[in-house]
Length: 126
Image (tube, rainbow, N blue to C red; front, side, top):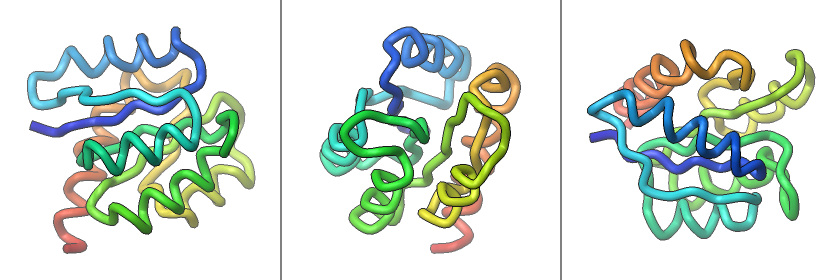
């Protein structure tokens, strides 16, 4: 079972991500967070295999949260989310430790394959 943390400041987006992930029997959402600070707290408490983290978050952006999560929990793979066109934030998110960044418009068909890929990359890196 792949345990997942969802981090997004919009409740509707968190619910959409949860619904998409519930389609897959090998994925379980174990926690949610609405800002960067809460993302770190939830990641440390639950130690998910994957954290799906929005780049633009209140209190602490997803890039900074990603850096801290990877530092404190290197076994958690991180997938970044963005609502805009690819830009420097995507590169910064990857540099902070995310395996990939997905546009929110593409989550229906790109999220699950990205989770599987992130878990495989993490296992081969260990």
